[in-house]
Each structure stands twice: as structure tokens, then as C-alpha cells.
Length: 403
Ligand SMILES: Cc1ncc(COP(=O)(O)O)c(C=O)c1O
Figure 1 (cartoon, helix red, strand yellow):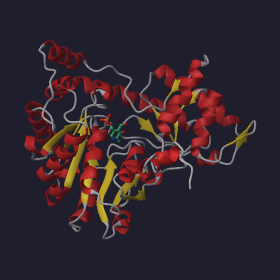
Figure 2 (cartoon, rainbow, N blue to C red):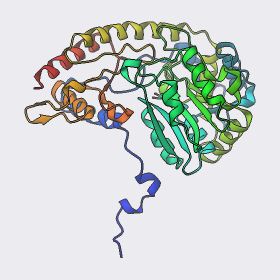
Figure 3 (cartoon, helix red, strand yellow):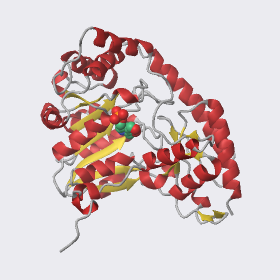
Figure 4 (cartoon, rainbow, N blue to C red):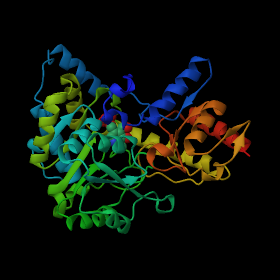
């Protein structure tokens, strides 16, 4: 008879999940800071800005007005309508409130969708480098992730021919973010249309388009793949308030989707969390109906920091640098340092390098292994210019010690 341990009492579903590498780095960084070291954190995925004042005021008013009861599961009528209006005006998506489900962050939105459409063994094509949670959420839904890689030479974007080659009769969905976490790649209208043309030939395939970094776009205009009419009935557009409006803690995300998919997500959410926080929904309503000047100012600051960080990275020998077009991460290729060592610490993979930079230089980043790109590290530039300059100085110094 096998011994009962705490571990084998956990479900297989849970045991199959990996721990978030991002959170592991954050924990280690906190430990070092607790020991009195001046740690510069470039590992977290959140804006360093405050939520704009008019959004905070709307939340305060919601409390004072007693708006403290359960809301409908898919969100308040006013917020769903305002989101539908935004998606029509800015993204060319022809939705009504019934196409919208508001959730406790875009993270929950994506989980709802995957749990609604994936059966055990169904394949989900994920573009690498990818956001860490995609693969784990597919596991939770008992699906199989099929990774299609974009290389730094192609600005980390997947080639349509590689996507086409990965499609099998079990393919149920394609999942990616644009602007991309972790690479900062932004797919153009032409590139997304090429992807849409492939999807159009395969009637069983959904596209889950994660557009949470929409407003952090440095070069071109944002394009939503859901606006390609040939596949509009099979696209789920995911978005939210965390990144563009600096509202990570408020926990509001949403989907725009065909009504039957929205109804499925409503059903799942109704049994798990119900509607997201009533006060946060009032804040989100103020955000989506207000002007975008604060979001635009933040994007200008991120662009300046992008230029600062990529410029400093380019001065470091052996680092291949990409120039992110959106989001607030850069994803340099550090493979020339793999196999090197310093003081007995050997760098066998990107996460070893991230840990070395943290221990030796007190700068936290995240190894690309977690994002399906083991030659890279992710550096967030959602930090002050001074901290970024100092962090890059330390990174350069630490890398020079590796022989
Ligand atoms: C690509 C991507 N999608 C979704 C999310 C989740 O955002 P939210 O805070 O709305 O759950 C994140 C957060 O880091 C992200 O980077």
C-alpha cells in the first residue's frame, strides 16, 4: 500500500502545473531586499504608474453610493455596453453587450475561454515566446499545447507557413498576444490577415487574441484579428484594464466573443467567481468611457525607457537585442553566455543567468525558459529611468565577469 503524503493527496491536475517563474524571481528578490540589498526589480509584469485619478474617483463614488452588491455575472449592463462601444469604435468589432463578458482580470477571461472550448487532447497552438500562463491554463483544461516559435531574426513573430504546418485535425485554438509579453512584438495588419486566411480554411479553429497591451504600442496602429470578417465568428478578443490604465490590482478584464462563447464563459464564471468586484467595474467604466490621455502619456514614457534600455543593452558584448514595438519588456538573446561561469556558478540556461544576475548584481529579470525561449531573458522597463540605467550598468558588469 502506498504511503499517503501531502503531495499525493493533491490532484494530478495540480501536480501537472508549473510554478510561475516570474513569482519565484519576485520571491527571491524580496528575500535579498529583506537582507538589506538594494535590489532593482525588472521581473514583474506591471506598470509602475498610479491608476489615473478620475478612475480612482469613480471607485470612491461607487462606495459612497452604496454600489456594493453582486453584479450580473458577465458584468454590469453599462460596462458591457461601454466595452462593446469601445471595441466597435477602436477595433472594428461589431459587438453588442451580449458579446461581452467582464471577468476578474484578463487571466480569468482566458481561463474561461479555454475551459469552454477545450476537451481533453484538443490542441492549442501557442506562439512562442509566450506569456507563461497560457501553457499552464491549457494543461488545466486538459488540452495539449503545440508551440510554434518566432525567432529574434523575425522579430519573434511566427511565420504563417510554420503556423500552417502545425495545424492538425485536433487543433482547436490559436492563442497569442499582440503586443506580445514577453517579446514586445506587434503583429501588423498584414501579418494578422495572413494568419486569419489560414484560420479561414479550418472551420474548427478559434483564435484567442490577447490584446491586453493594446495601448502600449510604440510604432504603428493596433489591429484586431477579430475584425477580419471571414473569421469574425471564431475570434475571441481578450483585453482588460491592467496594463494600459495601470490597474493591475483592480482585476478587471474582458472578452468580446461570439454570443454562444460569451454565454459559455458566463456559465463557467457563474459557478466559480460570479461578477468581478462591483467597485472595480465602476472604475473600469470610468476608464473605458474617459479620455485616453493618461494611457497615452504612460505609453510615451515606456517608449523613452524602451529606447534607453535597448540602447544600453546594445553596448553589452554578446547580447543580441530586439527592439520591442509594444508592451514594456525587452527580450534579449543571451545565448553567448550559456556554458560560461563565475566563481563556481555555471550558466546552463537562461534562468540560471537570471538567477546569477539577481544574486551577483541584485537585478531581477526572468529567464526565457518560462516563456518557451531558453536563449533569452525578459527585462521589464516599467521602472524609473535611474533604476533602469543602474540595472543595466550592473547587468553589464555581471556579464563581463562570466568566462
Ligand atoms: C499577455 C498577458 N495576458 C494577460 C495578462 C493578465 O492580465 P490581468 O491582470 O488582466 O489578469 C497578462 C498579465 O501579465 C499578460 O501579460
